[in-house]
Image 1: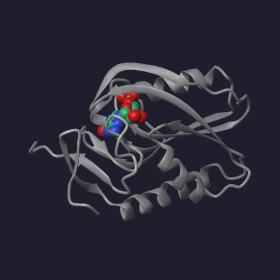
Image 2: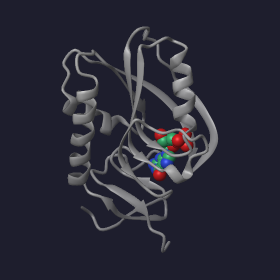
Image 3: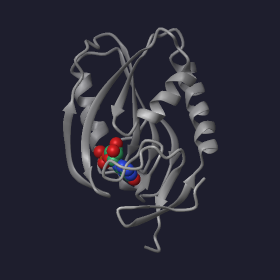
Image 4: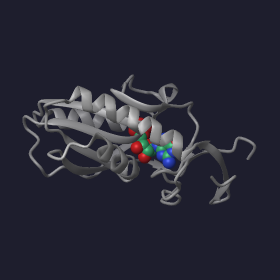
Length: 182
Ligand code: 5GP
């Protein structure tokens, strides 16, 4: 793991290692597999941030009949939430009667999650489960609680493992947190 990462003049320090990520991905995948036993889920990966987590999680869950699709919303500019959620790429597939598993990178204010779930409920799925890699409960503006959480973290800005700073550093294999000394 690199010591520090500097991007756009901001410094980030190591926070969660790839081994810790893999262990929690396995734990969440085991719980989820157990809960959806006998069902044929539709995984909905929330782009862009969740692509890496979704790839690892879905492989770990290991259900060959599962469908995988993608939706895209945006709310962040730089290192803070704008408070407004925009749908950029919606779902085209019919989800009526399906067991939907939403895979998200971070729940921060909870606005994206709440909006997405309200929207999906109108399409009459049989069930909706919400999995997130990271949850910042102290930032919540909605009281939304994800069903599955790999890591609960304080309200600090993080990058890596799919999470960006203005489109960059999604490639990092570990998770980094903004350096408070900056
Ligand atoms: P919410 O709607 O819950 O406020 O925000 C969810 C979205 O904000 C996440 O999917 C993610 O794209 C972005 N976000 C929230 N916190 C962070 C963070 O610490 N780092 C990064 N890179 N994105 C974040």
